Image 1 (cartoon, rainbow, N blue to C red):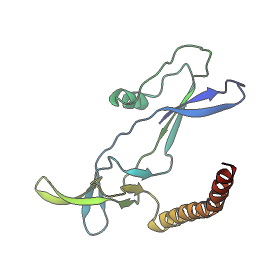
Image 2: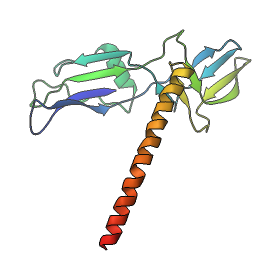
Image 3: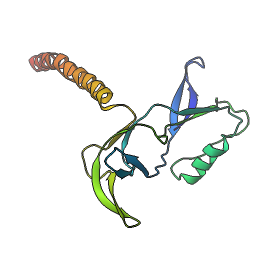
Image 4: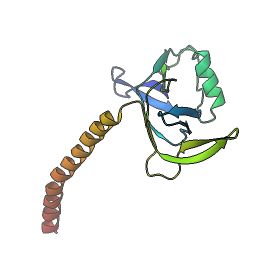
Length: 175
């Protein structure tokens, strides 16, 4: 993900980072759960991974070589301007999330069989299942996180329902 620092039109002291471009690179990888090896094609997955690397680049600098290569090889990401001093703050930061070999993963998705060099493997991919999810958190941690999210959504719905009825009643009464 490529972000740049943006100043408020009202005050330069109100600066924030905004995403100006992003891209993905997926490499198929193998996982072994103890019963055998499965190949994972992460294209289309929802990833839940912590930030692994962040590179900050000043307005006059080019990004490091590996970032430049990623930008050049990914048609959805554009280099942008690295011109000399400009009226805008042209600092950028590049953020990267990735899976490292040996990392424990939780994968929820569609599995199918595939043949690679005469060997049969399970292929986990985006195959029409309602959710394709890859995380480095344990199943228990994911359940806890999602449980709180859904509890908050239900509570919000319970709180918004009376307010909605009140607004409908007062609006209709005024007509």
